[in-house]
Length: 163
Image (cartoon, rainbow, N blue to C red; front, top):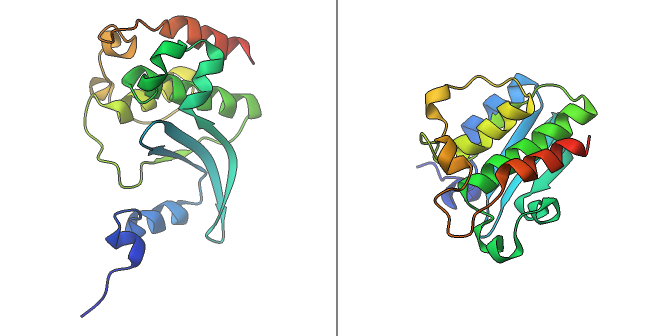
């Protein structure tokens, strides 16, 4: 009987998917969720050795105008969108190659935080194939459902001005 690898048992690594991503030879954007934040990294691989070129944490949104009283919502749909937009702007600024997306073991469902992240990348100018109908509604991206209103457009403009 074959034993599963430790990281597969812990539900951390899908080795078949990782092998496919490495064989593609393209850079990739890794999107991960922690208990409080989103982490996004632009990674290049050479001979199965990963090198992180740039990274963004949703906690960095605080310096762009995310309200301090809403710091508990840095794992919401607007935070995912702005995290994607922020890493997309950094990729454009460094003129890096167009990446492929690596969601790891996250479930990819329609109209969720994962697709809000993708919409942020697309709005930043990264060319990624995805269906428009999978993105969350504009009201959810703008944070209309949250108690403390978040000025998503204002934060997006501040990120864009940093170029």
